Image (cartoon, rainbow, N blue to C red; front, side):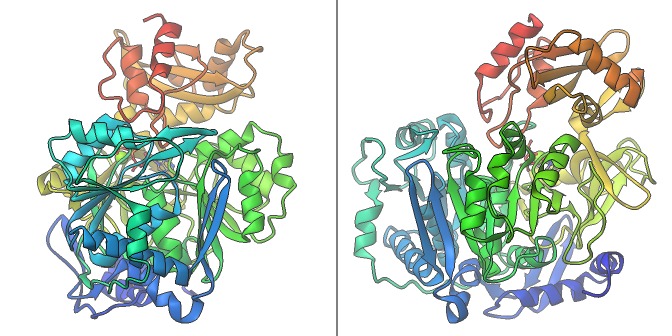
Length: 625
Ligand code: ATP
Ligand code: MG
């Protein structure tokens, strides 16, 4: 890649046909496409029309020729103390068995299969088996309770649900099967079959004619071979619901061909992974990062991938680094929230492992604050690459693309637009494009590049209305994130557009104030929200978790002073509440809308995707509402 970032990105926007035709060579096509894309019906983009391919073939079968005996999957559970590797050949056999089970129970191309499972190898087999036969999977994060699960069952209408009887967290079995039974009772739609992987962790009851046992089914299909179903590039591969940070989750529908190409290309140009190496992504298959960079991305690229069940702290805070050493991980992908957890531990857990194979750590999912970034950077002494994206896009929108050009990193910025994304920073009120250092909404001009969402599952109108009709006078995709762009083209995310605070006519991103507060030495974590104020319209309120709770004297005043000196008095929070926990989604993101509702004495609304619902009650107490 001799061209450098600027011209590379430019060619992707000016000549998308030529650009993506070239990237498409990274995947196998059963039938070549005759048109790179069709955008005759915006905002619906179709990629690689006429082409036929298959995600499972690209992730598994095509590697059998050169790497049958190479490890494809490492499944580690520090909960059950089990660890097992699968070569590409073994993975191929397991996926065939699983695909045969699905077929034997009537699942055909286009049917939905809901996967509600912990981080075990069978979840990977299930996803790949669906892709193999053209069934559409919808993985629902294992931590969700019946209510959230039921609404996804009603939306996706799966013919079959695949589950395990239990997960395990912190050494305790977490039953899944009773929650699933309850969800099916709650849902109006009823799946025909429930396939259960029995791990022997907890007892459960079964429903006759509906529930089937994975182990005995697998025995029946030990030698089954299920041919790959070649599907159109535009055939939906999966539905994945967004995290629900801002409200009701949206069913993101993804295609097959565009997704395969986007992942294959990003593995090389963004993540810098080479076939034969190992990638370790610490996310969960219930999230988009898990789909793209635990399962499909590394496997399509001929890499081994690690699936990890457990916490980052058990048996000790060195567990992830010991896996990096043991499996010679070269590419690692995690989230700021996980790094913050590790940061509270002794750094010796990190330094005692040989991390010489590790080239780069990628972090995504939420703003990467400077103290967290510096800590992990200093501890690892390797590049730490922040990257910004959404469930909707399936792969990064903003990043330093080290496989294109090793550009400098800037603290607080996930970098520059990824090739294929025609990014604009727009004034929300007028739709006008903004120059350097002006705050606006991050938007993408259509067509969205390959790999991004095709539509909202079953609701084209919601796709158009939600994402493409919010900026005045323009049909552009809104990310609903607020940012500034500097003169070098680096974006700095300032928070979500919903979270922008308007103090006496000054518009401030919650992220700006949080970033400033987190520079205070005794701040472990912080969330800022805007609440109604009769005089100023809105004022900022900060919720702070202290590192050392014995040193709280003057904390509120000090925090205010920090903001005053860095951002000015206009950004100064009206109150700083010291709390012991913040409300988060199960993917670890702070739910600011709930904090704001509580601070304004309102009902927080739907909080079913929240990790620990008792946190809000504690916060109500602290603020006396
Ligand atoms: P919902 O859309 O249901 O409210 P969500 O937006 O939290 O949920 P995701 O798609 O998982 O669901 O998260 C994408 C969002 O996460 C982005 O729009 C952005 O706000 C935030 N985000 C992701 N990566 C970064 C990053 N590197 N820096 C800053 N923010 C990020
Ligand atoms: Mg979102």
